[in-house]
Amino acid sequence: MSSSVHPLVSIVMPAFNCEAYIFESLSSIFSQDVENIEVIVVNDGSTDKTAEIAAAFDPRVRVFNSNHLGPAGARNLAVTHSLGRYLAFLDADDVWLPGKLQAQLAFLDAHPDAKI
Image (cartoon, rainbow, N blue to C red; front, side, top):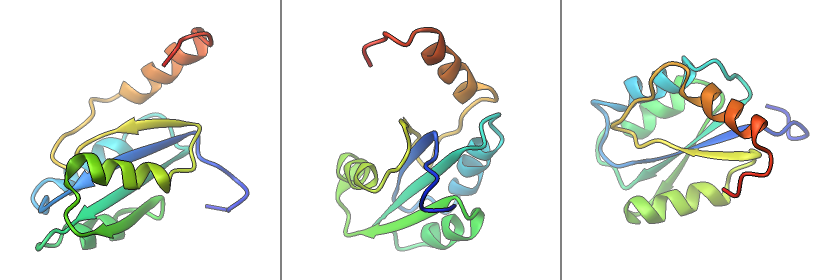
């Protein structure tokens, strides 16, 4: 991703020992109908291969390491590194259904005065 091009959506993902789940979670993000995204994974002190799996997944995934800040702290760290116009949150042991992100963006486009 060029530094002059900002993603539309930054997806924030805290991850702690999610080796068994993170590939499926990331797959659910990259199966969305929105391509102009970045994913910021905060490896929150994992002792498994969570960070390695995330880093190898796609060039749009950026991994930051922390010393177990907890989910809220990891999310906050990810937000400080986000470049997108919008933020979306997904935990590393969860998945998005197809069309989820596009539906949210369509709502925001249709309701530009929404206070969110």
